[in-house]
Amino acid sequence: MAKTSPAQFVRQVRQEISRISWATRRETGTATITVFVMATIAAVFFLLVDMVLSNVVQLILGLGG
Image 1 (tube, rainbow, N blue to C red):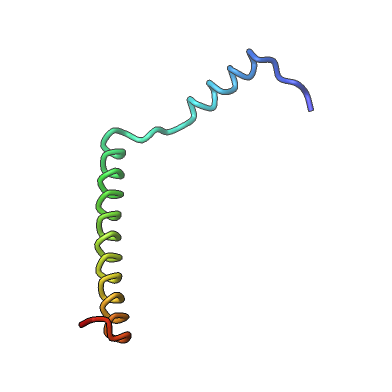
Image 2: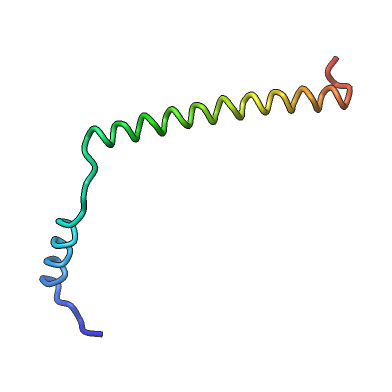
């Protein structure tokens, strides 16, 4: 395998960076909001499942009062 000089490496890196299609500010914002919404939905879902399972276990074990 041939060695690459540092200057040639930098040229190759710049060439590859120019090929990248970067997300726009709007796309980034939309993706961020989507992630926060989905994380919130998942958190609420698991909170409800945990509460239901906790109540079922307490009822079965007779610890529910």
